Image (tube, rainbow, N blue to C red; front, side, top):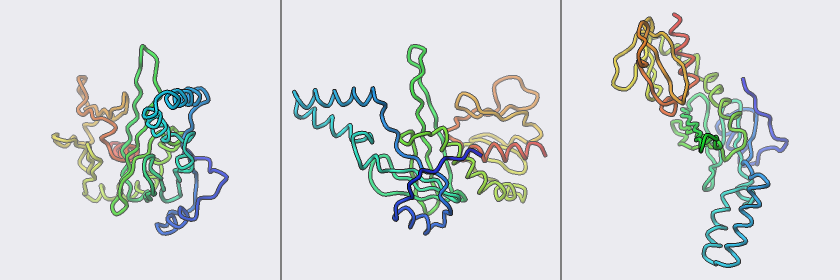
Amino acid sequence: MTTPTPTPASPSPEVAALAARHQLGALEGSFAPKRLGALMFLVYLNMLFVFSAFFLVPGVLCFWWLRRFPNFSRKQAAKRLHLFEHGMIVQPQFGDGMTAFRWDSARIYQDITQLFVNGAPTPAKYVYSVAAPSFGGAEVTEFYERPETWGPWMQEAVLRAQGQTVLEAVLEGGTVDFGALSVSRNGVTGTGKRVLPWSEVQEIDVKGGRVHIMKAGESGPPWSNVAVSGVANLLLFLTIAGNLGRK
């Protein structure tokens, strides 16, 4: 499992109290907002100076816009994403407060995109939408540093917390909803599709931001081709489907 490196500082009393209330266990890692690089910081600082010196209203609007970055706002810089043994606590990029989730009830939808301009890649955008009954919902984005670490860690934590329970539910005859896809003891199905028996599933893989399900004996388009962003708890789905497909 990917393990985040905890920050030296302890969580605030408010975070510790919320974690205790929801029995989230030990703190395993914290992530601060990603700060602008030196070059971009100087570019934005110069932009703010120019607008403020010659245009009052644009200068005020520019300052208001820049306060979304931790370099220009102590409030933003103080926010954290905390990962615990049994859940997480996140402060939103915009607004106040914090939201707690437990891994054993969380549904996570991930959407990772990257555009290319004249053949050159732009910075990747990470959006992890998290929801759970009685906990509410939140979006965790690349506003927090190292999304390539905390994103997979959250998916692995959900797998660890829910995997055995979900597998048992399916083997006992239940159907488990993963958003755009569902699994049962009989097979896998998608929106508007019949059940594809596990014996007819040739392969399930993820590429190009989509989940491809290939039907055995067919060489044409995938039997199902859905966006990763439409599949809840992606790693849990892939693991359960992999286990059932081998039975």
